[in-house]
Amino acid sequence: MKYQVGDEIIVLLSNEEGRVVEIMNDQMVMIEVRGVKFPAYMDQIDFPYFKRFTQKKLVAEKKTDPKVYIDQLPKEKPQPNQIKVSDGVWLSFIPKFSLDDFNDEVVDFLKIHLVNKTALAYKFIYTQQFFGKTNFELNTGIAAFHDFYLHDIPFESVNDGPSFSFDFSLQAPDKKKAPHFEASLKLKPKQIFQKIEGMKDNNEPTISYQLFADYPDKAEEDHFELSSLAAKGFKIYDASKARQHLEPARSVVDLHIEKLSDNWEQMSNFEILTMQLNEFQKWYDLAVAHKQSSLIIIHGVGTGKLRDEIHDILKTKREVKTFINQYDPRFGYGATEIFLQY
Image (cartoon, rainbow, N blue to C red; front, side, top):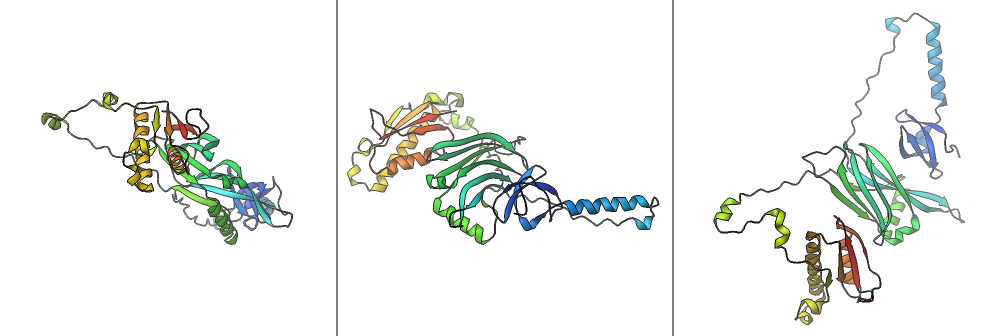
C-alpha cells in the first residue's frame, strides 16, 4: 500500500496539502484538507516532498543574487475566479469495503456525511431510525460549502428500513426565509445494492441523495379584511381563543370500521381504509390543536395494513415525539400509543 494513515499528501488538482485519515480500499483513501474530509483516488494525490524541495531550492537560489531587476521578476499568471456554484444539500453514503475469504470486496458499513453545497449555513436536528425506533440523534450546525460527518451504520442494517430525518433552520435568520424546513430519506435495500454496483462500475466515491436544492422562502400569509364580513353577520373569532370553538379531543380513538359506518359491508377495502385514515387524521389534528400529550389509536391486528399506514404518517409528523405498538391488556397488540411534543 503506497499510503498509510497519517501520511502528508498534496492534492494534484488544487495543489493543496493535507493528510490521509483513512484507507478506504486499494484505490481510495479518505483525506483531510483544511479541516474538510473527503474521499480521493490515489492517483489524484501525491507526497508533497518534491514540491517542498523545489520551493526551498528556488528560495536559496534567489538569496545568492542580492540584485533583482524588473525584467527578472516572474510574471504572475492570471488566476481563474473560483466561483462556488450552489447545488443544494445532500446526504452522502461512503461504503467501507473489505475482502472476504474468497478475496471478493464486501461492504462492512456505510459512513454518512451531510454535504452543504450552498452559500448558507444551517442549524439542523438529525434523527436516524430503524423501523421507527431512534438509533442516533444529533443537534448541531453546518457551515456553507462544507460537509459534516454524521455517523456510521452497519451495512447489514440496510435491511432494517433505515430512515434519515432532518429539520433545518438558518444559522443567520432571514425574515424572507422559512423558519425551518424538514427533509427525510428512507433507504430501500434493493435500491442501495444497485447503487453500490453502479458506483463501482462508474468509479464514483459516494452514493448521494439531494435533500433539497434551495432553502425555501417564507410562505406568504393571506390577510383579509374582516370588518366587512362581520357587518354581513358572519361570526369573527379571536384567534387566541380558537381552541374554545374546537370539537373536544379524545384520548382513545377506535378505528374499527363497524364503529365508523353502518354500511361498511357494502364498501371496498380501499374505501374502508380511506375512511379509517381520514378519521385518524381528524382526531390526530384535534389532539395537536388541544395540545394533548398522548393519543391512543385502536387499529386492530388484521393484516397490519391500517397499522402500517398510520405508522408511516406518524413518521412525518414533527409533533410526534415517539410512538409504540406493544401488548396492552385492554387492546392486545391492536393499538398504537402516540406521545406528542410542542
